[in-house]
Image (cartoon, rainbow, N blue to C red; front, side):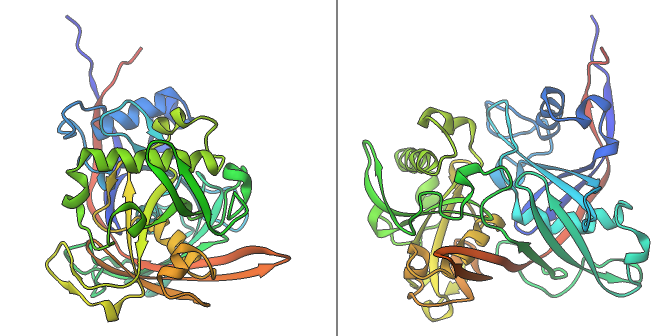
Length: 397
């Protein structure tokens, strides 16, 4: 009986923000996987350990959550004004597909450090000490991201005193700028920040109800609803929702009809093959609660409450791209996010999520009746967890 040999591929296992994943240089992948297609998808699935009917990803690098079932492919950019191209793959845990439809804002924090350490940033641009500005082309959505990576003694500084709720240990702060984050390059979702043309819609969801919704393309397509309209208060932690199969099904149904209204899909049945986007989130005015770490979050210390789901489950903290959507929507008077934060003009908000709080800023303006956002800014951190080679069974034929 013939057995498949294992091949080894250079890879780095990194935490970025409140996510972690396996990062590759494009040139290190097997030749067939250097192009989009079935070979690449099959490789990413096997690396992470999917599809896994047990939902544990024991035979791979995944951690059995949406935050830890991630891959990224980084290459030196040929695009003017950019250092690297960054392609993100959200790997399904129990199904055989990789969703390439959106970005991971958390893992973005790891891309700059990976690019510097991997020789993908010109050495002349790396200071002996200070900040290295890495210009990233986010290939999934066709947007520019700027990562400000701290450098010490000519190398990436990973340790520091920056604390990020949702991450146990402090690390060095990495400031991330998402430039022109609204909509995406190929016109997905109508190519506009508000694809329906409205700040607030009445979203009709058969079998569930009709809800006020703000549907926005910024950072990542996101459907925002009011917590109270769907029977929540906005202070919920993961166990309150993730253990309720009926609730998760309702959220997925709302998300599917939101995707249809945003023009991301042509039929609600397509939503199951587009799990990464759009996100669905619910918002509420400030209220005190105890975070998942046991820390008390005081209402006076936040502008609003936000809970968001990723890949069908309530996220343990907040997706970075969804934070961009939150900051952008908060900056535009009249959206549900803005109203939950008290209304009026805002250039930054601090919101409460299950693990704690996060501050995000955005610069928005209205021109000729259309809202635009020049950039959204937040701070994250990143750290190499392991580097070397990842091994996968491989058919040499």
